[in-house]
Length: 278
Image (cartoon, rainbow, N blue to C red):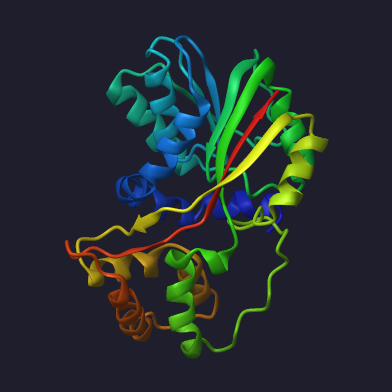
């Protein structure tokens, strides 16, 4: 997808799906948000720029960690998700702010102390230009901390259901360009480091973070339902205009191989934790 397609996607049915599942998604992704905030080491009074903020969970946490006085700023292209983020901020009495904008071109009224993101930076059509623009919104001496996915094949939470469902597809999807905008665009660690360096960031570190991910749902069946609503497999089923019912059976069977003692499904994830200075 190019930027225009991505913006249309997140303002349509996909954005509303994420709104509907926001609490479950935030719970599933909480360990990754916590890792970003730990790496960011936000100090009292600092304001963060949260890229691809979605429903605002990371932005609100950044504001709270800074003492709750200076509001961090979340930027996203999805109006449905931003509406929820603003409601959450109002309900919490948080000074966090949210802007509908493409971060690759957005300019803040004044520079912020740091940039953060929880899986929100992999969708730029021109990532080098985007990271350079984001660098321009952070004060000299500021910093960045974000998390992004490694390769799809290393992320069992997404890849295992896809593998199980592959025989039921009308046709196998074409091999994607590994650098194209999308969840796994920064799988190549060296390429990511080059992009950030070219954009003016320095002291770059990229480290693996590979926890088990507990899927939403208290049992295999509810976790399978979730995976058929969101994620790579759901988009393939929709794109090929297929009945999701047969997929449910094979996904349940595959997820059943990874059930914990509490009945929940947990699968491997593989991410990069990225830090740099402005």
